[in-house]
Image (tube, rainbow, N blue to C red; front, side, top):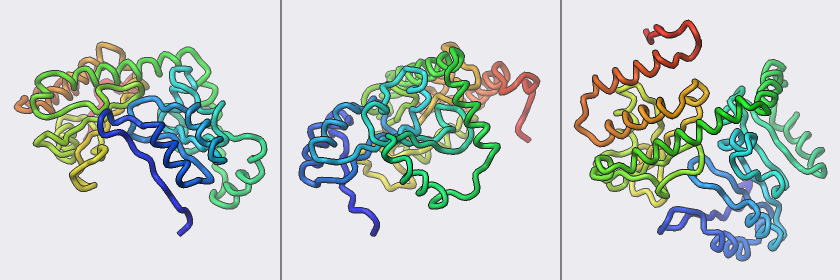
Length: 288
């Protein structure tokens, strides 16, 4: 046993983090480190409040911003950097770079972190990945990158709005927290005939890839959970704008509402892929 872990959760009323509860747990447990960040939470976190709690109980604050680092870089999401002792992230999610990671920290942690990463945890450095990371960070400072991140947010909000439609809600499907502030939507299937595995398979059948995901207070087992996590960063990188995201949102909503012509939905997906190809010259590319 390496760590003694005490967890905090979300409120049953609104599915958001209750900072008063976080404070109560921290006071009771006296942790050495408080961890913030998320992988399936569609709202902003209050990093200043986490900092205040950490200071009150004498803890360090570590924030993992792997999912929302691109939004932070574009100035479209609160930054944890001024508040945290250590910030970690991947580079391949909203930042859109190679599969790798980064750590930002105060100078006092530099020697310990560097020696822990190498030779402690990391193998030989991959120079092509380092070059790709440098390119990613340069791109992240451009207006083009900021536009992509804004389209990512806009697409997620369009998706959340469509999944709140009556045809979808009539099937017992809802959007957790009632919307999103970030690049993803967490679909709540607890009151639906569909479970997450069935929802994932249904959308896969028409050419859309999402992943099944547990939701808070999930009554179903982990392999067939009661949620779907749907992100918009990849489509924004592909070049999708408001028109294309509205179409994707309607396709997903129509499919989840049930009773739709799946061949027709598959055709709409194919047209989107053809209209906005991954690269010029791939307009007629087909999966063999």
